[in-house]
Each structure stands twice: as C-alpha cells, then as structure tokens.
Image (cartoon, rainbow, N blue to C red; front, side, top):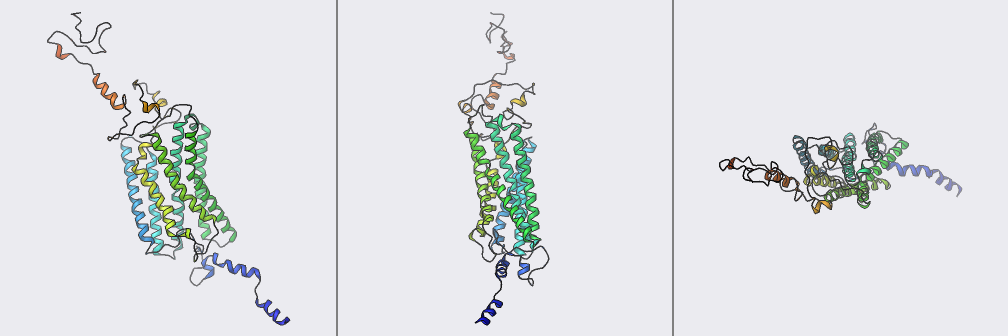
Length: 410
C-alpha cells in the first residue's frame, strides 16, 4: 500500500504545474505550438477578440460594403468642405469627418488583407489599432457641437475661461490616451512577460472606459443646458431650429456611446480562448457596434447638413458673437435694420431654411428687408417734369409738406 501511494505521488504533478498547464491556452500560440508559429515577435494572440479572425467568405464581402459607404462618405464630406470654402463658409468639422472616413477606409483595407493573410500578425496589429483609434475623431466632433449648444444657451458660462480650459484639457487627455493605447497594444504583441501584458490590458481598459465616457458626455451636458434656466436670450447660430440641433447631437451621441460601452464591456469580462469565443465576440456584434454605427452617424451628418446647422461666425470669442453682436460692434460701416420680432423668434424657435438654402425669419426677415429696401427706393421724378411737378421721396420731402405735392402750388 505504501509503495503504490508513493508511486501515485511521484506520477501526480504538483498543483502549480496543473494550474500553469491550464493557463497555457492564454499564452501566445508561439509557445503552445512552436512548429506552426514563429518563435520571434510579434506573437499572435490566443484570446478571443471582438469580431474574431476575419475570413475570406464572410468578412471580405461585408467589409467591402462598409468600405464603399466610407468612400462615398469621404467624397461627400470633402465636397461639402470645398464648396463651403469657396463661399467663405468655414466649417472645419467637414474636413475632420473626411479624415475619419479615410481612417475607416484604411481599416477596412487592413481587415480585408488580414482575411487573405490570416498568419500575418503585423496586418492584424494594424487593423486592431485602426479599429480602436478611428472613432476618436467623431467623439471630439460631438464635444465641439455640445460646446456650441451650451454657449448658445448659456453664453456667460460657456465662454467662461474655466469652462473653455476644461474642454481643452479634455481634448489633450483624449490624444494622450490614444497614444498610450497604441503604444501598449503594439507592446502586448511583442512581449511574453505576464506583467507587461497585464499592464497593457489595464491601459486598454482605461482607454476604453475613457472613450465610452467621452462618447456619452454630450448627452448630460446638453440636457443640463436645457434644464438650467437661462439668464439671457438664446444666441442662435447656424441654420435651422435650435431643437433640431439638440436632437441631432443627442442621436449621434447615443449611437456612439452604445458602441463604445459595448466594446469596453467585453473587455471587462474574463478573457476566453480563441477556440471558445462568447456570443459578444461574434462578427455580427463587431460590424454592428463598430462600422454600422459609425456609418450611420457619418451619413446622418451629411444628409442633415450639420455644416449649416452648427456653423458659427468666424472669430467668435465671447458672448454675443454667435448672433454677431460682438463682431458688428467693430464694423461701423454696416447699417442695422430695426424691426419687430416674430412670435417664433421670441420663443427661440426660428423656422427651417427655405428651398433656396436661406433662412426666412418671417415678416421683417432677410428677404422682406430686401423687398422693403426696393420698395423704398426714391423716384427720380423724371416722369413728372412735363407737368411741371416733381415727386419727392419720403426722405427728400420737407417738414410739413406731404410727398407727391408740388412746392410751387402749395
């Protein structure tokens, strides 16, 4: 009995060895099967990721569709940017959305190449980095839109130096976090050190959480701007109704935050081996919560013409600039027209722009003022010379003498 027990103890491996053998699936495949994978970095990951390994039969057709959508989106935003530039209509966001579409075009191309070359780890690294980095552009654009809406509703708060500095620090934090994520993502593919890999995972969790928070941030900011009572009149900017701008931004922010929180939620769950992925690692989830949501937002901004709705006057630096008050004070040569405000303007709900792309603000608006100027054009009196009378315009008439009366006959 003692000899058999001793033999069992010799044959049975220690508990630590069993634990290490169970964790071998989570190490790079270069260790698990060195005959099939190179022993030098970069190492292919063995844990399941969102979307998994792309395939030729499934991923290439789907990715090609999104590639076409992003190409058309890039062409649309660049066309809008160039047309506005020729008219002196400065809207940098169109150029930024063009840059985002170009980044997504590169991402789709990298994913197609990865599907054709599944053993190319370098292409897999590039595709993963572009997937994580591209969405940052849309998040920053939404922050700009939210800042403009807050400044319109609460100009003194929105233009306060502390508030502006907070947004600038937030933009800097996003850029630094992006650089950190890219650096540690590349490092995780080129090391086998468990400590370094754990640090890289922590950085990815931090970056994903920050991106999800930034994606959601415009929603509470805009809602607070609506709930908090205004001390001044709403400073409208751009074309269209102010409520339409709010609805557009809330819709885009909700969609982007949905995708961001889904992605970071999968990172917080325990890792799974590539051979046994979970349902949230499926290709459907990858394309819906990444390329699908982003393409909807891109085309939403194209079709609803955010370049007109969210445009602000050049040189806006303080309260009143959105309505041109601060800018017109330095333009003494420009004449102002006094008119009675319409009911829609009193309640901060200007009508939509007309078919000619101009905003008709009701009676006394831009078009009506131009018509009034034409109607008030003084007559030169040429037609009354034969009768010996001269028709005077309301401006030329002397006090006490009504218009259209001959001075000699009075």
